[in-house]
Length: 604
Image 1: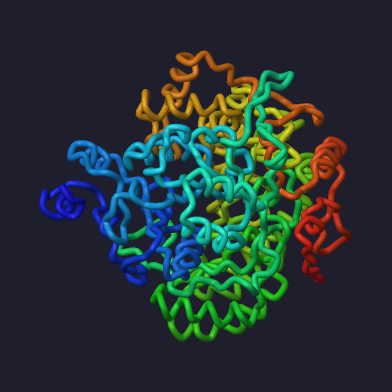
Image 2: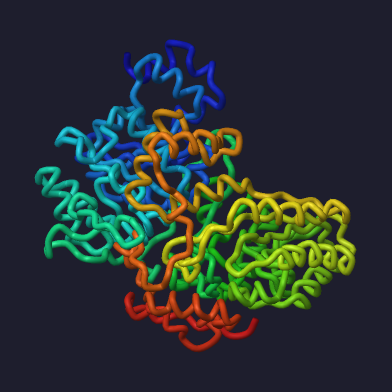
């Protein structure tokens, strides 16, 4: 049965939730005929989430600029559609042409979060593509993966043919050139391995460390001992996608998105994104002002988001806002800044953008005590937090969300008590009644100063959750992230290739995909798989020594190991490292490795 017949002649499309997830045909969708090479651009989650991802839109536009390349979108269906596809033996298909993706030349997968790894395997299975890379033949597409999770590719390395580490804009031409060549599949993989940023696992073998953890080493001197990330040096060379696809259904973020800056140099020691996307690189403010209006004209959205890890750190944010505000007000278009730092400047900007009834403000103190804020290099004190919330109240803001973490290195129960107390002080001083405290469990991530830290034991987590629940006495709402989900995220994030066995077993023996979805998460399934395989997963979440061999050291994110070790040591001594945009160079190594001159900022 053809895919189009399955969708439109069987009545299936009327039996599943949100049928528009599977039909394509949205405004600004790219349509091509007779292209030489087909790429399945894949986000391994449902449409609603994948279509909200900015990087996905960027890659879609960039790949399709080549007339010989046709990049089509692929998402993991929801379970109701998966059941029907398996019943009718329908392979996973693209949205643009409703074509089976196992006929494509490449499947390019974005890895945004570790618990999506089981989705990747389910997606390959639905597409009738062999799960393990060694099983694939010349008839199968090359499976490539990119995104932040590639800083430790080992847990999923047995399933991926080639990883790219870095900014995708830098290698679009390389990928297109290799795919268009008449070389064999293996010859193409060799070509990828010769280009900076690409890691081809089949050209590496495994070595055991003293901690019984496997690391990858090259099979010969022809392949690099460490694979260097490749990053954009100047965004003047890369255009913003102005014809963003407009979904036919509500998605997580239904608005125009403009990336104004990439990277963050604030140096929070726990933050994987802040380290991976270094250094801070800005787009020109005049260019941005023009493009924002152009994107809104081409999409019809009534809201625009100025995106970055720390939007308020953009050096000419006032200029952009002053430039576009008349257009936004005339056309009744809203604007949002997804990242708010705790200072008066943030309030001033937010008040400027929102007239009339104020929506909520979000701040991330991250820790309740000053000791812990210094330990993580947050660089703010309690008076700043209290003052800025009071200013927010004076300016008409009536609800505030506060983000904290528990389980940080060197943390005590008293530090968690301080979360309760600072939330109470904020409520009393500001008189804001609507306050929500969100608490996540700290997960140590690769290539950060806290990569050496252990994951907090579950007994301590449960005890500290009880402390957070004291907020009820003060009529303050709270949300606490599922601890067992964080526990598994830590295992996968710090794992080696043996974790691939766990991912495979959970996917196919426990039907354990879509695990990042709150309703679908099933810790018991993972526990059963661990027992069935006899895996000792505790070793992955214990503390590392700074001279230990780490499974993710095969990847070089351009941040020096000396910097990470120094920051780990400074955290224990409560020594702050200032943002190098305001202060002296912190010697992390990124600017040296990228030949990039950082933009200095003065003032707030």
